[in-house]
Image 1 (cartoon, rainbow, N blue to C red):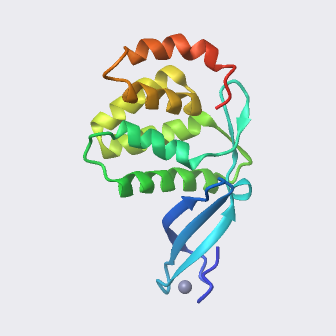
Image 2: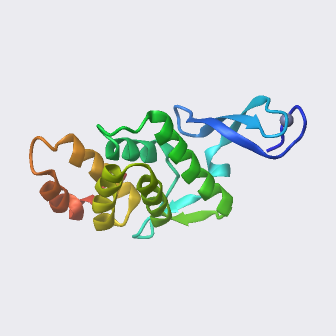
Length: 172
Ligand SMILES: [Zn+2]
């Protein structure tokens, strides 16, 4: 990605958003040489690898899912939305840097765990304890959301376990 002003290729992403239809990523970038800012629009299919779930199914990469999972893990913790977005950026860049067409979902989960480990211990433990019993990031993200949403109601963990089987037939 060349800077339109000085053609430097090194830059940092300062903001990254998925379009409403989920097909485009809009990125604000800052050139590391001239520090001027520019915006890029990238097609998701072109920039992100397909995520290979544990059962072998493929699904397109979904940043929103990752951000939501991180948000849930960080609920009521002193972690700002900027920090969460930055974590998602780093995970995303890690995926892009590999340059693979497909990536195991576990790669995303492990990356998120490493990030949370360095960010907030409570969020890390929440994330890790649920993630390790699922081993599949998209299934896990849905469960984590429900777990935290319904913490005050039903024993969500039990519900989660019971639902696990049926989930195989449910599209994410
Ligand atoms: Zn520049």
